Length: 440
Image (tube, rainbow, N blue to C red; front, side, top):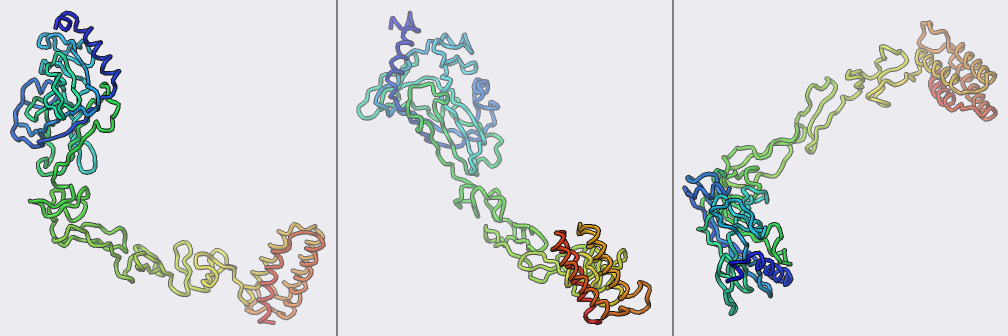
């Protein structure tokens, strides 16, 4: 007693060394007597401490916490060395772990505990902090004898418990204003020694939780019609665990070929996702030659037979390109672009002669070889006839075909001898011979 009265800081230092050196206390929290208190009142000091938002008209979630030392050694803290807190609010004690609370005017352990109210998804709804007053042996088991019973020499004997009853100041969470707090499901979590100040090597058991039954825990309870857990409010069970009216859309259509699903008023489950019937029209602003219908849930566009769709314009098969008379709509080769006219009439053959001419110009052959190919092409052109001929057939189709074959033979020979690329010439001359063959 003399030492505590005259030299508190010395006793405190000794106590710290003992507790830290032992380093084998094991503090384990437990939660009990969880209940709501409506229209509750608290002291102005608790408001000043930040425990509550007002002194009256509150909804509080009260609960008790017990911290038991399951370790082989005592937790020894000793005398915090605090001044008269009623005269020194906010003062830091000789042990800096403790301060004089400016609201309740008592010595508080700064790392006492954190209280959390969690929703079913695990998100914090309310967070509060326990302002611990002092560590005492309130109850002991296994033959242990209480040793720390006064706040001027604190500690926790092994197999003893420090009990904070639900009725104590700040032993609650202020849940005023939390929507449906009396009917929703929550989890209450308590974490002790949040700053890891105490000599407790086993931190894994510093956290404890209890479930508060209610809407959102996935269990249908009295007063509820349904409970789908965190999914409440997204299907046929609303956020207050009641069935939504029949006909309420629970899954909107995701596209033109997906059917919306509606609740039936008796089940919390939204019907299985379904597609609209195959053949249902699904296109919008489609060209006249395009039909869009649903197939197995997908919107599929189909082009009308014997039609091309070129630059968003419907073109019937065989129609010529207004900008290039040598191309036309040929759905057999392409439905989305103009195709070269490779028909057997004189105009189509003249168009192919132009493509052969372009291919000769692209060979890269020596001038002499290119001139020879060009000369053979001109011979074919003379046999076909002039472009202004009134006849729709070549003038001398048989002659033109023989000369085209001669051109093909010479082109192959030029390619081998000169090493230039005559593949384009061979391809186009092959088309030309096909055009001339029926007429020949």
